[in-house]
Length: 482
Ligand code: NAD
Image 1 (cartoon, rainbow, N blue to C red):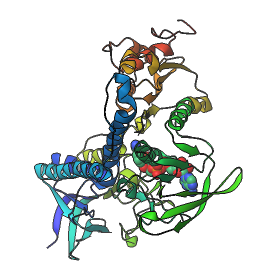
Image 2: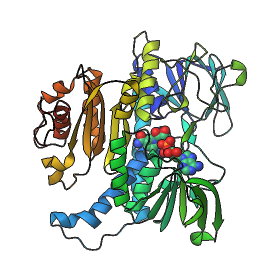
Image 3: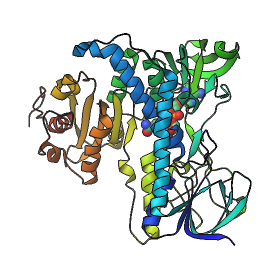
Image 4: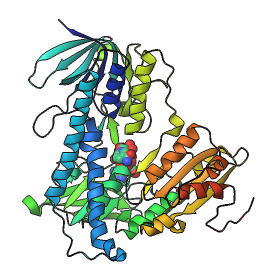
């Protein structure tokens, strides 16, 4: 007899597991199917984010940052340390421990909320049925009143650089190096390329980033992107823009293997040889073979399941959320979509505010933004005021010897409503969140200016940027006073 559920979720990443937990909280009998196996061959929940994405990369970013601080910056504080070394296998093992703790945490949350976690590969075989093949090859059919596809995404591979997870790796392989590569190539100056390039550069790799586009971080505000590029170059990243990779050749054996990358830029054809190469050219939705063709679920030309604003698909019983659907491939966006879908099934009116999905790049300094940037507003013909406050003028940032970057706040010239905030600096992600909340409440720059901020704190830079938008920041010279 088939097991029967109100909600069956396919995939247990931040979109799927959050949807499953919220569904169970709302009283739905819920199952979540996950095919991911850990290194020991055991089913683990958490998807890309917890296993090979956000969490392990942040573990390595934090470890490598501490190493770099000890090696390069402790002396400024009057701290003397001996020769600072790095034990890569120990660093990787700590990262694995953090991952195990958090994936175990999801299992615990499933148990606590009475979500049935099922290990195996799921396929939608009818508008109300999901067939699961477990890792022993046994088949089970789950009956479902509602199905949520939260199957996530996988790294894009490009023909010139086939990934072997040894010399040429993707974002997963780049979390598993057993030693610091002397020469590291990175294809793609996107989020993953910059984060993982930073990890290994801090640990001592000579890092070259090959980016096909001519502009750096085109999705970011231009002023912030320019500052970021300047700081990353200062940190030793060799960022080559307008460099299109056309081929690669692997030579040598064992630890002596190298890869020579062929690329073309404005000056013509070039080659460069690396010990390891990370391919970070984007991700694509993982939607093939998830739904039987006869069901007629609509998928676009890039593989995204077609959904409306509420994540409903062309089939009334089937929903899709997270990286499998349009919009930025971000864990928090997927989680909110998962919550929206199940809350609407429970009769609530929940919506995702797609205009306020924050973006973060976890380099150091971090880069974070929400809302519109200057270029977008100019293109829309919106009149606006800009307030910029540099961390070099923040007492707290100077005390921490961490004063690179700035907060930039943009407000409507006529109504003063905040239209966007763009930060490059230490703890940018956490600082930005204040403005995400403010924008959710339609705050004006004046509202932020009239709010009391603790002193000394990095968030004072947010306060000052808001004051600067109206021409009266206290701790910088103001060109115009109002
Ligand atoms: P991305 O789209 O951010 O960047 C890929 C870059 O590769 C682009 O700049 C592109 O121009 C370049 N590129 C593509 N083909 C190329 C080629 N042949 N030669 C040289 N350059 C080439 O993608 P990503 O960094 O791989 O990240 C994938 C997804 O994962 C993104 O959607 C991202 O939002 C998400 N992610 C987010 C975070 C975060 O929020 N901090 C972290 C990691 C990943």
